[in-house]
Length: 193
Image (tube, rainbow, N blue to C red; front, side, top):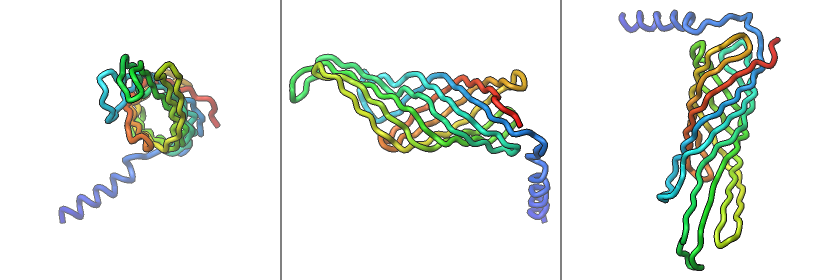
């Protein structure tokens, strides 16, 4: 009997828990995020700098429902390393390398509370590698499938502008590494209809 009462209460609660106003207009927003990123890798070098800058740019369509969809790009600094007098089979040389990524994603966001939303995206990362060894410049570009997910809190300043923060986890399948970023987020409403 207790189970039936609990199930009935859950069913009734589900009808009222996430009620929405159906007259809410559609909006198109731009979201800009800037902040810190930390690269998580299995590379084991003492001189590896895994801390860097992260930036995000999204255009999101926000219908009357809790789910929003859009396009995302940005910039993530992954790592850099500089080593001097490295012994190799070809001789001794100074060595430097760095990698950054640019996502091109389909982004999805779901509002779970008025100011709190879950964000996710999937698509491809453009990976840009730069470096030098034996006095020659090295460049390598590759594409990796990847995804990210996170949580964002934003506070509206007025009808057009919101600010807040976002914590995001990213995964790169080609290099099988991850990245965590913490960003300040600025949202501007472009259109409403």
